[in-house]
Amino acid sequence: MVEVLMASGIAGIVMVALFGAFSNGFSTIRVNQESVRADQILVEKLETFRLYPWSSITNSGFITPTNFTTTFCAGNGITNGVTYNGTIQISPPITSPPLNNLYSNSLRQVTVTLNWTSAGVPRTRSMSTLVTRNGIQSLGQ
Image 1: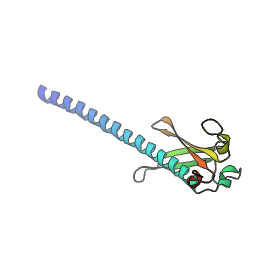
Image 2: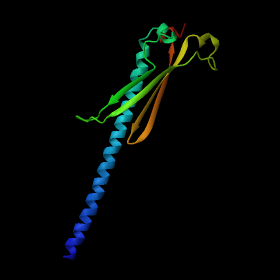
Image 3: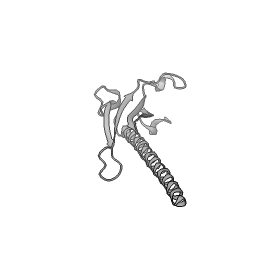
Image 4: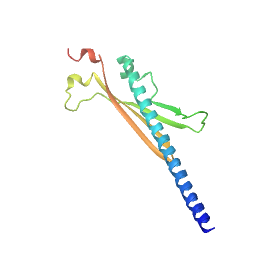
């Protein structure tokens, strides 16, 4: 009888440990999925600037809104997904070294920032790129 009780106790402890390990593993996978989706959103927003004419980037009548919201639901039928709140910022011309004033009117720095809450923890991710007036083709001229 004592051996049966000991074996049951050990089996119970092992089951609780396994449940905790699986729960922690699934939580880690979900946080990583949300982080990868955040990277995808950032790259998507930055890549769209390749399609915009220079006048759309420099004028106040900018095509893309500076604030946006995107959702992500992992798996089938999960309705309690993550909401990403994003901002797009276009900086004034860059005039600090190593760039001189010749390039300052032809460059803008575009920064996209995402904020979301994952597993009760607020998270932030940001990416930046430089956009030029004439694109890559005219850099050597």
